[in-house]
Amino acid sequence: MARMVRGALIQATLSEPGDAPIEKIKQSMLDKHVGLIVKAAEKGAQIICLQELFYGPYFCCEQDTKWYDLTEKIPDGPTTHLMCELAKKHGVVMVIPLYEEDLTGVYYNSAAVIDADGKYLGKYRKMHIPHVAPGFWEKFYFRPGNMGYPVFDTAVGKVGVYICYDRHFPDGARCLGLNGAEMVFNPSATVAGLSEYLWKLEQPAHAVANQYFVGAINRPGTEPPWNFGEFYGQSYFCDPRGQIMAEGKRSEDDIVMADLDLDMIREVRNTWQFFRDRRPESYKEIVQP
Image: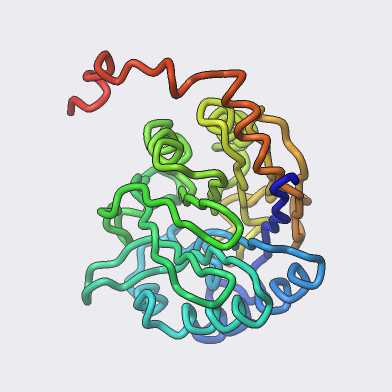
């Protein structure tokens, strides 16, 4: 019997302008996403992933300490608690990107992974932090991750997380494969004109090189008052052959769903023996500073 898993990716436009009160923005985005999560669950989703920093704007297009107010503890913060309740209620695995406070003044771009029984399984902290003009001033907000590339054994399969800028680095994507990932989710916030030409190249390449499914999530639309670029949506799933299975809209809220046959991983790996034929002893240059 095929190991079928119905996955859902949720992309959502900003529901309040970025210069609205922070708590108002956060609550409006939480309310919007709760509604979308319920809709995805009603459509049979078994695993759901949200976009990067889902409960706020992409505030990294400016440098302002007020956005530190969006940080929360993981797993002891209110959003993780809320999502654990939703996961248990609807019986779905969830990948929830959050702005994490470790210590006061030490913050990470993270994602919590919650099992279908509502149990918190762990978190991933974004490893590669961009500081790229114009508008991606992430080193002002985030410390680089320090927890490696964990894979979480969930009710629906083995799940890895890579966040946005991480996708430009194939090394971590390979680590996720070696650590046993069957599905890798990449919640993102990226704009047209900078990375769009890479959007459907890099992650299908990761899927092929490591022979797992990839769920790539991107924000849609523009975000006032900055309007520094269009978040071009087009969230998608691709299979271990690199074929795009389902794709979202460009500038609208959307729930992108696909049925992932995890048995395909064995089939593809038995055809293309990339893990067998690796030569790690010859790759020493990769880890030189």
